[in-house]
Image (tube, rainbow, N blue to C red):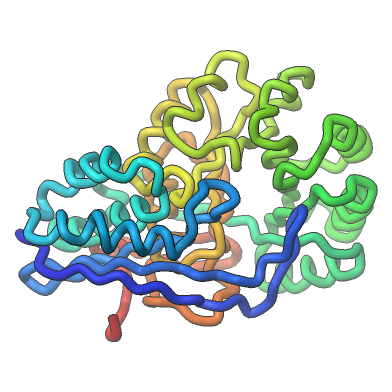
Length: 357
């Protein structure tokens, strides 16, 4: 079955409200959408929103790479060879994970629809549903509690708290959340590389009894070995995020293990196939998986959910990246029920609904 038409669209999907992380405000959510139409009319959807500060690629650069290098070589190829096609383009554009992710996702979606199976079933499903965390940006204690109450009223009970600007304020927010919600919620922390060793030690000491589930990327990229001074029981809660960009990046951490958790984002590693490679390596090394995202279309969020459910050492998901978008390219893909995310068992490919693209 040949690939007949390919199209790339870049669009700012807009956030309903901006939020703060360590060092900056997020208010722009430009995404690209790649569609692959087969000769029988099936359309596969892929999308990407790479973070330039993490991977050195912007959505506009991903769009340019797709138009220049991918479209001319992809048209006319056989969708049954989709895995080989992904590997081929991994070699051709290795430094463009956003472009690769959009391509990889679209090919998986088109193949799944052609083969009449959900994408997760290509690899084997281990989960039906998992609770997702929802993100609370850096704000004062009062606003943090208001945001948390709104989420809790919507049946979300796993909160990811953005930290890293001021450890003293961070501690106050964590303690306020635990005091107000008790053990009824799970607390995760994402420092976005914002802590110094002194900051992290202070934060850990002051929150030792607050039952924090995990801490994402406390130190800047390149300082991973500095985490080795902490006992193994603490390092098991450290989660690699910005440091984990590719399959190759994980190899130095497999023996000494500064991180006990790997945060896999399709926008960093280049799509589902590379994510599955990282997941298998982590499984063999006894490292848990955390599936994260940027502010993304439900297209790439759904793809990450399929990949997460296909890895048996998946333990955490943080796939709320499309919840606050003002618009999107398609609908469907996943559902959210009482804080848990799941995929539709009776839909093929990634299961989107769309009448416009």
